[in-house]
Image (cartoon, rainbow, N blue to C red; front, side, top):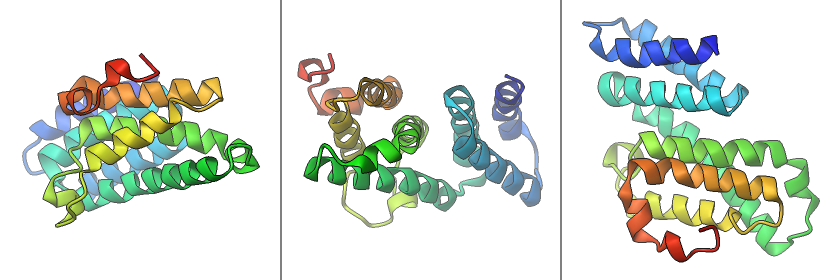
Length: 177
């Protein structure tokens, strides 16, 4: 809980600082990323929110966040392909903790960052919001209840922040509603 409170304080204070050192900001970004990778949902949620404030308002270090997002997104995409090809594959069972973390983290990152900005994806014409939504929706139909639940939670994160997700796909008529 202390980590969450510190992240919240940093989220509120860092954007207000005048001329924070580059080393200080880089350390905050790196430490937040380590916490996102290591700790549970509550810490991840607070750290992603803090990272959003630091990157979006102060450092504009979009490449750093894009690399983190891609790590989780690409892993989810691989697991989706493996599951689609063989629903009984033991790969998903072996990677379940990482699958659950990835579902939650991708949703949290999509809430705090607009990955369709040129700063993130460059000149790529793919609409990242759509890809994220399709990926999370896929896992809402998974046979494992825990995976379904985490996919729904991950899906809820960007929907709360950005109505695009709600309007673009008819979520009300999807099997999760």
